[in-house]
Length: 159
Image: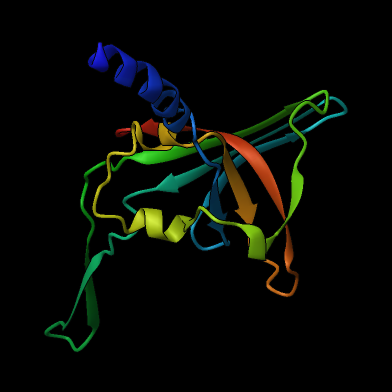
């Protein structure tokens, strides 16, 4: 009987704690995210961004001098395809409008650049731990208010 009573008392607490998801804000500037496409019409705003997880790979460059005294440059780039995150913002009939937020009130935030350099590259289920994910443009450094867009994220393992 004690076990049943204990279970009944703990069940609401367990259920409440499981549904207590927070919002996540992904902050970006020009150097850390790639805008793939943008459509602006009367009733539809559609934007697709990409965070390429292999962007930190730099080409190997080797310089040498030929027998005739000319500079030679040998560049090696790996042929490996890297995973990426596809970020999609869709606002049809103003049902997902961007919101204005104060940068000081953002709690759960991660920079897109930090995602690129993360040790764990498997983001297939990571973003499911959050209620909503917002994309926030930080290119204009002079303002404390930013525009946040609620997005959908899809992890693509490779090309």
